[in-house]
Image (cartoon, rainbow, N blue to C red; front, side, top):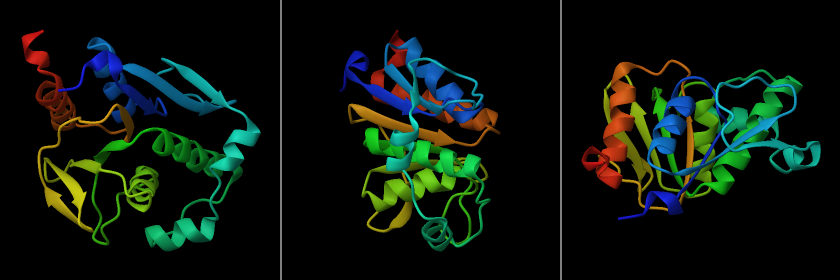
Length: 186
């Protein structure tokens, strides 16, 4: 079992999933890095790291690639591009990826969260999604989604997810930390 103080959590600090993951991680001593860009409001700034324009560019991906991978359209504004660039840094720094949201019929995840999940799949990272409609964890294993209760087993975690975190989503995150670090004993 990993020691929490040796684990790093990478996030964007957004309201909902990322904020709750960060607060839960902080309670047990996990280090947190929150990536953001100048002028973008977030809910959680623990370990805040503002990315420079040069750093943001390293996470740039053509909107055509995003559209093709996600099989849908996203706004192509400079602001949205920066959101996707920040997501690159979150996923690139964390190895095991946790997300909360909704799985769509095409196997991608709803909203901007979906790009983080797609990057994790593209980078061949262990990726886990708490699917809020199904109220269960699913993981990307051998190129398909399978039901399983994940455990945090890597020193670097990337987190992304919906702003609309349900009570079941909060409970799933709490149970993930309990399974991974025996927090119910603390």
